[in-house]
Image (cartoon, rainbow, N blue to C red):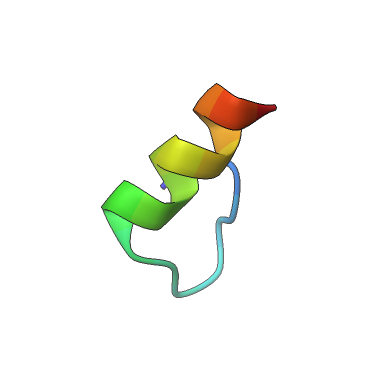
Length: 20
């Protein structure tokens, strides 16, 4: 995902970015 670059699930990173 975008929010967490290292070894994250795409959905998780994108969700964190959206909530932020």
